[in-house]
Image 1 (cartoon, rainbow, N blue to C red):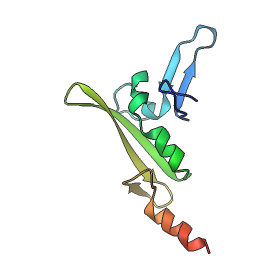
Image 2: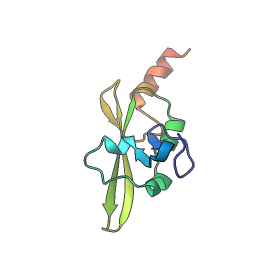
Image 3: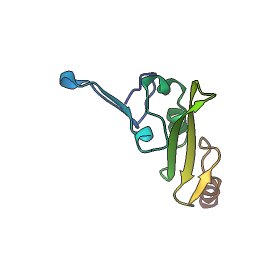
Length: 107
């Protein structure tokens, strides 16, 4: 679904049908340590770019919205590989073990 920032994100949901006023980021809802989501958070969110560049089905993302210096809101993304049960430092590139597995299979 298209976010308020204009990018496609599978974690964003909105419903304005028949008087409803629902907008939410379901990735933030799963994280209890995060601040509540606001539509302006989509402007700085790296998740749509990560999902566009990395199509791995084993990559799981966790988005945390936190206060920085007491005033500014920051989106922090943590990535995990389910296939190799490890954290991923660069979610755009993905899991290095998955990349090595793919290169061994290809001729």
